[in-house]
Length: 510
Image 1 (cartoon, rainbow, N blue to C red):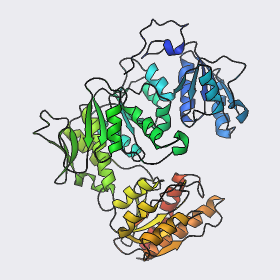
Image 2: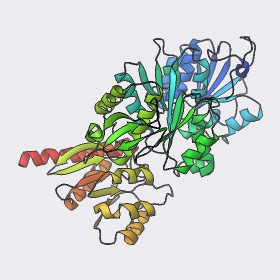
Image 3: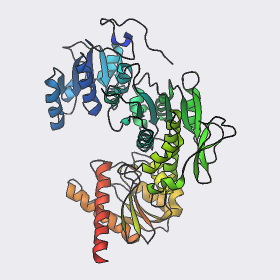
Image 4: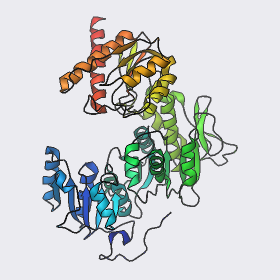
């Protein structure tokens, strides 16, 4: 692990040479690229500590103008418009660029900064350096699917253990706000995307997990290998545990290649019976053979599958059980006892649009997993149900849905297709499930909110018409929402509203 600089705290020293943790940013000239939630937080936190801050963003929106007015009162300069993002400003000197995670390395301004030798950090990197030496521990979570579920499960478990903990990063608070919170957190459950990790040099988690790796964001990273390497950076500097999926050789290799602190251990998680240094399932129980006194002969009971039964229409689906084991592994590595793990899992409720049961009408469960925006996420949701009418479709971003349909075929009662282009789904269903009835919802006019709501009502009605008592109507599109909806949240909200309206109508006529 790269250690922090040991030089004296010279206010004239370049920011990258100033000692940290507890980095003093007084007098540092910071350019913040991107004015989203994290960009605003960086400007706010560094301005308060004496930095000179300029923010640039291409989007000259009402929201950005309002945020700019707030910061400009405190002498933060905000420049909105695409012309400000094409190159470094010529009228101010820049010591440090703190970039939005969505900005690629080949973005012209960032490329110019790199050539000029100006350090480019993520908000996560800056937060790590500014955090006090005795600041909160970090437990890190990344992966293609399941990140938010795991960090929010982990937050619940940590709080049940009596710790002041918060989920932050790609969900909840920006990391810099959590790390510099004046009351002080004990531990941060940090969700990190591959974009955030790309721009982070010192992750330095106490323990971390890569849940899974599948094809996603390959255009941004330039290929699967680069994407995986970005994910694997979450292990760098780990002090206690590198948690990995024993069924995924790629996550194992990332652990093997990680630059960890001496003494950090590899901790496996499996849906089968665990070996030493693993967590897994035995006779319906979640058990720990990693954080016990004699892991070769002992296992600690953490919870039962019944404790998770509220997290799915037919009990917790396998991917939710796996996520619970991942959260438990990180918590146990932090010293949390068995009872707090159990109580946290019992108390946990999934966030919106993540295998969320939104209605039950006539014995048919309606489940919103609009967050399943790629085939792997959709397959995880489908594995959790026995007989399903599947609402699928949208912008696949070129992803192959063939393997998804092949594995899910035996569970399908029917399929309702949405999206502007349903070719990939139709072709795969013709190959692997030719006898399954398909309803195609006319894309229609989805330019306005009412048109989108009308289209989703039609999809829910069609799905209900195909379903039988005991079935699940599952919105797990395996595709992005941008071809018809504002975002996946709107897609899920409209599905939930249509399903609940149907449930209310059923009750009125009963």
